[in-house]
Length: 259
Image (tube, rainbow, N blue to C red; front, side, top):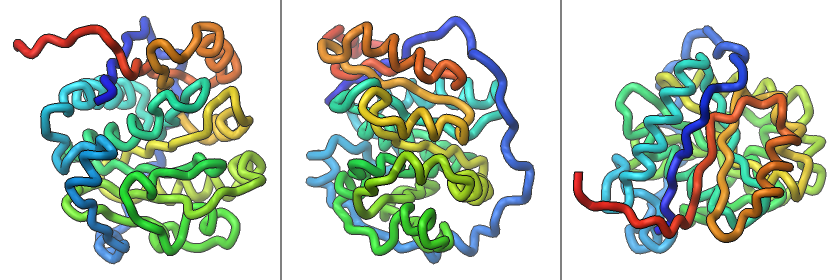
């Protein structure tokens, strides 16, 4: 299990736009979403938390959830970019398990969007092939609710996967249609938190161009892999985006089992 530890930051950088105050789209649309099964052996192999964010590896993600939602509430924000300087930091797994932990709160809905259009992998982690992807919503104006899927047993968790690699992904994410799609998602479910999995900051310009559409970010790094200068450069590039903090994966620091 890759341990996730949220590091405290002295303060949030700035307050961004408040969420859309429009009424939520009626829940009748959501049960129509295509549903897939996640077999327990695959779930365990992929290190995905079970429904309700329980199990022996849940504590770090629950702690991360509490810190993230507290800071989002202080900002009146509900859109979060999952970031990392380079690949192999554990960003996508962190995004998945954070979304599951947030969805475990009865008064919130978590919507995980795979905007790593250069290397989409959320659907692969869950073991399904989507009929439609978020790229279809952006390029063909397909309705968002047609591409959203559910995973059986995971209440209040919605996935908006990507099907295929997109060559012009950064230009696509910079378009106004992306903003419109986000506004549609912000009206789904109760107190929705939108989590966007993005390509590594230093390996593509997607995260930089997309940052104008999102209210805050969370930086994921890996112990003994991410270098200090890489983290510093990634933060410098995203200087206008408030960062809620950093998540340290694969920490070798021992955890006590005692309360």
